[in-house]
Image 1 (cartoon, rainbow, N blue to C red):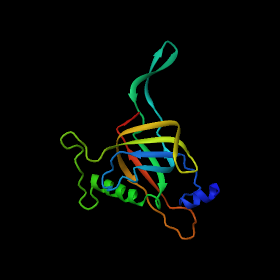
Image 2: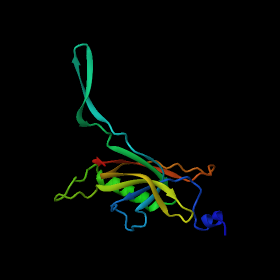
Image 3: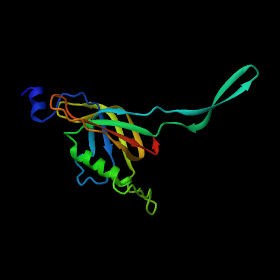
Length: 175
């Protein structure tokens, strides 16, 4: 059996995924089968340091001021048909932070533990023909993550492309 037949028999596709996202325990997700997600795109924020200026004689000097001005958001895109339960869990998780019915928001922490912030790891790598992820370059670790927005879904019978979904996360710290 050739490689194409193996991929087809596994129910896989030919999208060029090269990113794997690992989630901590996701609120509202009963199963742990979707804790590793193959993503189409992941946007890692740039690291930005604050600066200050002062004048020295006729020169303007710029120095770092020690403030971390990195944007505390990142975004990922995944296939909705492969991770529908994960999408539903993200919607419920987002709704539990701010209720769409009452408009009330949940507490950030209860007795020192937070009910809705989880760790997320983004790893670059490749997938072999058997579908195993082989890490290659780098990993980013995000602590204290929550879904800021759960993207819109565009359903189109004329388009032959898979349905994709964007999720934007906020985080407390990126390592």
